[in-house]
Amino acid sequence: MKTVLGAARAKMAGEEMRRVIHPGRNTWTEAAADASGPSRRCGRLLAYLLLGGATSPPLLLMSGWQFDSGVPLLRGADVPAGAEVRFLKFLDGLCEKSAGLSIYILAWDFHLVFALEREWMQKVLFHWMTNPRFHFLFDDCRTVGGSHHQKFIVIDGTLAFLGGMDVCEARWDDRRHLAHNPVRLSHGKPQKPYHDVQTYFVGEDAAKALTRLFLDRWVRAGGESLTLPESVGAPPESGEPRRALALGATRVAFSRTDPQGKEPAIREIEQLFVDAIEAAERLIYVETQHFRSRIIYDALVSRMRAAGRSRLEIVVVTVTRTSPRGLGT
Image 1: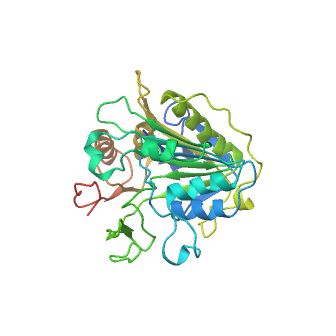
Image 2 (image 1 turned 90 degrees about the horizontal axis):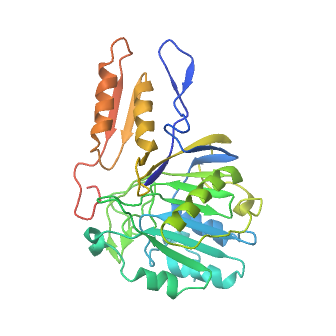
Image 3 (image 1 turned 90 degrees about the vertical axis):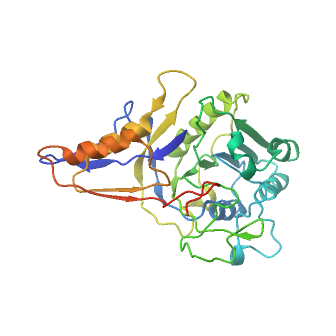
């Protein structure tokens, strides 16, 4: 499963601006965001915000494809002297220091194919060897060949991060993507550049939408129904993430892919892409790790061949090949 932020509008030939987003067809829900924009490294932002002393009672929800206990959230000159910045010890330490903090992590119960690159015994490490207010649950995908791919974080019900970033080994990089970076290490070994996209949303409305999604996933994964504390009314640090590219207040739309173990499956993301491609007038830019969807291919071809439509330029950026570990090279 995967969640993405949908594009809001597209210009049509001979028409005024027309909405591409249609709730119930290609989006799940819309929400207001007091502030938004692409963010920098997820781990760095998470550490800065929580170290900044989120107001009480703090709450942290994390959904992801992969989490590694020892991955450092801060690296190099960003690490405060003597600070513990390894993911699990950092969060568990926050629970010990703050009596009001509750943490819920929902992770994909990975397939055997990924066993060699995954950390084993995570249920013991994350659930049984942490503070009682630190909760960890594996979410097993019931669809053959599928995986849970929703990656988002909600802090105190007022600040959310959503995108493609994993808090795990071999996924860290900074925006420079240097060929050689002395702090881009995994278990002490140098790693290749890695690029992904993350967005942030400030405000209760957008955060509540992702919280609803998290609570539904938690129960469907076998967890008990959760009663969460009310949001504290202001995001950590009472503002946007530092050094983020601010795009201001806006409305956002969330789309999903979710088999839900029943028919018909939710395929809002696929429909949104098809609708956006059909609406495009001048340029389509595609940046993706894999391009294997026949439906998207057919949509691109159909739009390019459409009679009486404007000439379209399509740019596709992808990896030249994929290594056994799934990293583009």
